[in-house]
Length: 68
Image (cartoon, rainbow, N blue to C red; front, side):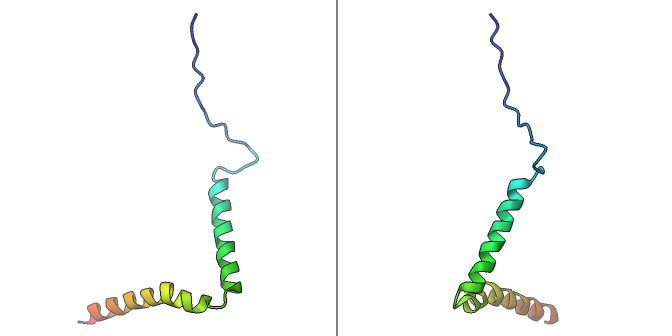
């Protein structure tokens, strides 16, 4: 008696695009970020401290190194 192995194959559903879940997760993260920015009392300070200030410092370093 021969034992047949059934290979695990992913059968994509035609109703969903190929990269459906990564798109959904990305949109949910963007929505959560926008919600946090709109509802947080200190979102502007936090964004300045952790996002904008490091980028501006990097640009300042690039500007100083280019003109030296």
